[in-house]
Image (cartoon, helix red, strand yellow):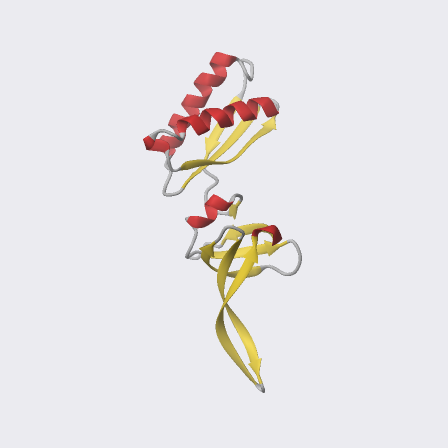
Length: 158
């Protein structure tokens, strides 16, 4: 199964070299069952259902021609949508959004994603700081290394 996933990834990387798809990237490819492949694609800008359908047809054609998954299989090509950020590249288009960062150790941190660096992210948070007998709310920038992030979730506000 890993070989099929690697072949599908190579096909997509080739397709993403085209101008129309140059800002697309793979978030995850997995075999949900032996005959069901799930492919999650994202974009630095936007991605729509028509683009995903074209990528699905492109992959299906190659899978069928090569016979990688037999005659009966399911191929789902979709966008991960708003929710958990799985790879670093997803963080960039979510700058300015409210996120909850679940850490490997310690309690989750919640704030607005303000920057993405090579090794870390920065979130702006409102923290209550005690000065003598007074409690003062202050905006602070919190730097969180990628190595310390278990999961980051985009918080949707209505």
